Image (cartoon, rainbow over all chains, first blue to last red; front, top):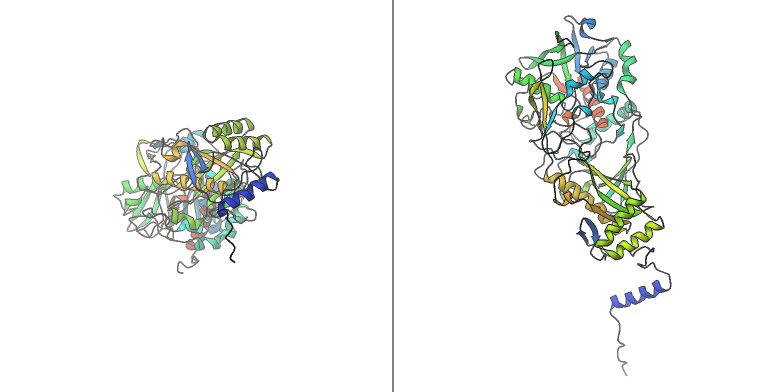
Length: 58
Length: 482
């Protein structure tokens, strides 16, 4: 008998879960004040009032 | 020998092998190199042995254009010329600086870097430079260059004892050249004035103008006007393609304290786009420097960031408090695009010898803005990629407003005006620094630069003078072929 396939999270969501766990365990720097921000995987530079920011900078 | 004035020198009808006009780094290098090879050299200096206000006033000239700067402060009219007050910053031009970079902008030299490289060790010796430090990559697109320093060598102090005792070099102070005498395609004599405007006719077999980035153009323009265009027979490029290294504050940044570049208080290091990137991005060469700001202005900068990106601002402020970040001012100097409309012309005003003063028509172009915005954007992008910090650029870089007139504006690097080019219609001298169409008139110094790269010019000036010395002494320069 063939087992039904287990529902799986899409890869991006799985990565998020892992990252969140790592941050909670203090094994990966998060974006909390004082901690270095994670390097963006891909740079998309935008200009806002002269600031050369990544599109993800909030 | 060294004479205080022409009367003391008593030149009479003597015909020198070489007559040099100007005793700055180019003229002094040529004099000492040619004198050492036994040629009879006459070195004429318009000023005296020391700074004199009345003499310096002969260099007063106006800049016509939206950005003003005093031309007389970048050059000195006495023995040793501008080496009396230069900063000693030395860097050779990049290989790409001799080549075309941006379509439609004529930055190409008729020689390549390899033609000057044989003269680098001797130039380093003359300028007393320490060992070179290789460029380091900064990310994929940038490199970090460490500036080399001359002590700085003052050519008057270094070489005056040699000039005084030399049997081959006759140095005459207070000898101002006001005209060139042309006959059948060669210069036969110079019209030289003493401070009382007494006239002297000076003869030599070959002449080299080494009077600086403004005076070389001015003298040739005036001589051409006096002699019906027989000195520079095709005058279309004469005085034109004049360039500077624009110097501006371009913005600010906050960066990791341990970022892998040097926080630069004394212009000792810069970040530049890698040469191979310039052509693809349509940029000329540039150098970016970061100089630490104090904590209060750093805090202010990050507070302003928080208005645009609150979370990022909070993160940066926390890092600043823990002294992991510092604020820095960003300054830049860059290669100005050589353009025919930037030029030295003769003014209606005259000096006390009756010679028209120089007038410089000069403005920056969209390519200048594009060059510095492109370079600064690469730097900002690299900080983002390595998450080392963020950059804020001033509005004028984005075309919101003009180049700021209250900044430093220039580097006191006067280049072009008698540029080197294969075509007489597009340059004044050929690859050997000989004026097109004349057999025995040469030009030395930064006025022959077709383009100026981002490097300070003195090292290249000395390399070119050494190469010209070889040419004048009959030793062929390294082949211009492949």
